[in-house]
Image (cartoon, rainbow, N blue to C red; front, side):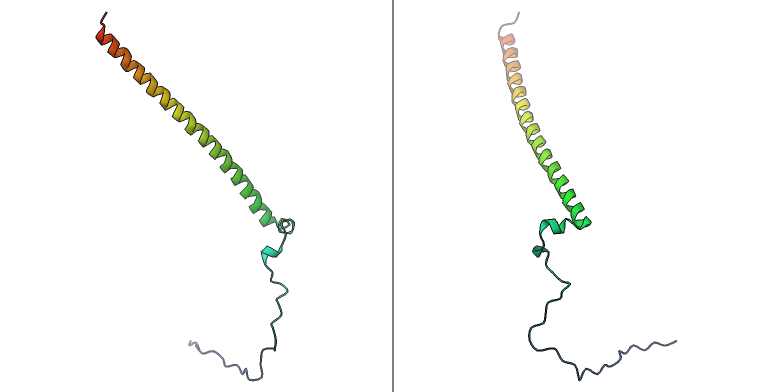
Length: 99
């Protein structure tokens, strides 16, 4: 079996583009032209928006919690340093004045 790898020739000699501007495609539009309420009518856009809102809320809450824990961690480290310093002083005092 053999295949013909040639394209058929088409006579374009009577074809021409119309003069003047090409009219806009009535089925093409820019999303920027739509208002949010119109976009939300599309279930895929609505789902994307809901997921984005949920992710944003989670991110804000996680950031808040992380900031709180970082501050608490710094406070605990400072307290630990104070306790270590106090213990060193107590041990020094016991060495200077054995009982």
